[in-house]
Image (cartoon, rainbow, N blue to C red):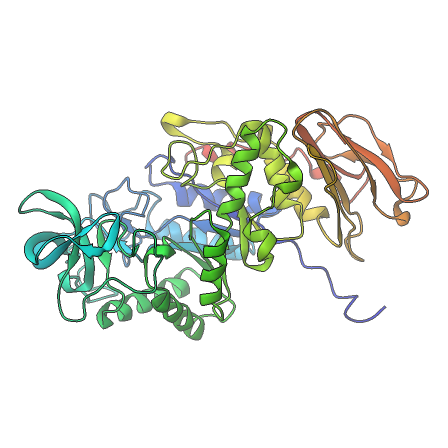
Amino acid sequence: MAEKEMSPTPENATLLQAFEWYIPDDHTHWKRLARDVPKYRDMGITALWIPPPCKASSSSGNGYDIYDLWDLGEFDQKGSKPTKWGSKDDLLELSAVAENCNVLLYTDAVLNHKAAADKTEKCLVVDVDPEDRTKEISEPHEIEGWLGFEFPGRGDKYSQMKWHWEHFSGTDYDAASEKTAIYKIQGEFKAWAAAVDTEKGNFDYLMFADIDHAHPEVKQDINDWGVWIAKLLSLRGMRFDAVKHFSEDYLREFIENLKANVKEDFFFVGEFWKDSLADMTAYLDRMEGSKFSLFDAPLVYNFSEASKTESYDLRKIYNGSLVQARPVAAVTLVMNHDTQPHQALEAPIEGFFKPLAYALILLRREGYPCVFWGDLEGILGEFAEEPSCGGQLPDIILARKLYAYGDQNDYFDFETCVGWVRRGTWDKPDGMAVVISNAGPGEKRMFVGEDHKNEVWTDVLGWQKGEVKIGEDGYATFTCPAVSMAIWVKDDAYGRDQFGSFKAGVGLGKE
């Protein structure tokens, strides 16, 4: 056998979004994750996307209301030393545990804005039309904006920069008049960033105090922070919040600086949340050379529609999705902290469809799948939900780890029942057959290979009872229950004894 063919098959990569919006502000989440990293690694999780670790506007802020990039829960600022998620020491411990378990760590980077300034500052602004930010609707006038950031709890440690009005391009509140509007800050070289999404004319302004990434002091401070936190936490990737709203030109500069000073093989994914494949692919084209990925928002909306439409045509489930158009650049997902129930971008997916959706991202060759912590462990708070997939999402993840390898043969030939086969590789030969149905009981005659003839296969989930014997010709008829799915694998395949051993929901316990 050729040397290339004898190379070991790499384990499938699976990302876990390691938080959900309603986790309590008990400051113990870093400890909770550190405790569970070994479990996640055994299950098949290879990377964790952690929430924004920087100090927020309050001790209960999730970090998207970011106050200080350089405070990772170390300084007494905004009501506490730890962030909602925990202390800096706890975060460093999580980093060490993840590295020891060979789990990659990606942080959420919120670079678009700052919140909860320490003081107001007077500056000159013009009001702009909220629906078309390119239209000025007032003469220049002075406001008192919350634009002064002194970081009294941190002082000059790590960074000496203090932020003032000139470091921002816009804000939304005048403390003097107590008026809310979208104010475009005036000054030499001041303008909305040009390389942003064109929704609302120019979508540079999103919320709070909008950072001016054209300012040299801003660029230097954020670039330095990126290198600092990447080295401190041994990061292997970043998720960028709100990339539609800040300069693509600056983001490319930030990425190149990080790769030059930390690691060339960093992973970068952006939240470009828009149900427009054309806009997403155009963005990726503009980021060419940065090895950039995006979350597949159109696929999430397809899943939502499919779960709410009777007899939805499953053959069209990938239509208009990023994973269909650019599989290498697509991070596929079912839900995240923004689309979960009662959040701003809520995209409801009925419970019966969650297992099908996870099969469609986890058990296929295309895309980099991201599992949502709220689906795996449950959602807390006022809108609490149990773990999805009947608590067996860990088993679907494990099936990806063990069997989702090799060539993929699709049987997308019936509206309400589709299937596919993964043929395995020379060193991961077991393979799998998957059947999903969003209507009555499903049935697919599929070819798994003559090398599997006379083998007995069963459903690893246990949802479809009975067994299937592979024919002499390598074919068998695989089934699944109504409005459900089945993952068929040889009954004595490697790792079969591990199914059912991972209990969903245990991550909710406090330390």
